[in-house]
Image 1 (cartoon, each protein chain N blue to C red):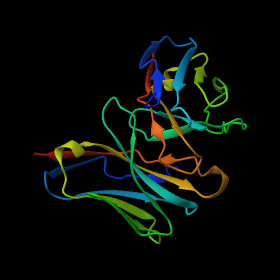
Image 2 (cartoon, rainbow over the protein chains, first blue to last red):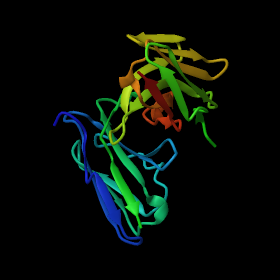
Image 3 (tube, one colour):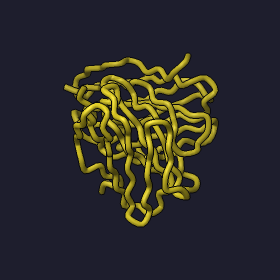
Image 4 (spheres, each protein chain N blue to C red):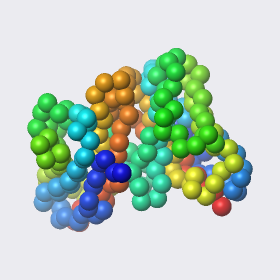
Length: 114
Length: 114
């Protein structure tokens, strides 16, 4: 598609449940990123995928968070046993190269844990 | 420890006047800086960037200034238009292998009044 597509756009879940967020990057973009934005905060880096290289998972806040990407296609971010502090907008972005900046963001998934 | 700071949460200007958004950073390893613009319910959109080898970059109504010695950058919008009303995020990346990772400020909400 023309842009980065994320689904669902909104998700309300009960504390303790698992959630899965999906990202469809722009075709041909080898790099894919996940960020999150909690209320009143800037965007926080979570994870980076570049082609078939090992991902940089250094931003994942706990072992309840994991992400997968097959090749240069769809990525899923999974949060297990959700907590209220996981409530945030989760943003996916993609780019052609890993050179800093200028990536294209999706509209995000607003996750609310109740 | 906030490495990128946007100390003004909001700014209001009149249409036609100049908007100046400020950003300070603490990490001297940052060498690439970007501004993103975000409308409600949309992902951030890349606006303009500057490399640390420059002190100014201009693109139409948008100019970014970088003062490396002061670890300060600013975004000037002139003339400001009502459609510029959005949240503006400053972001920075370092050199080397992790230059894909952006560190964001908390954002400044710009309101341009007709």
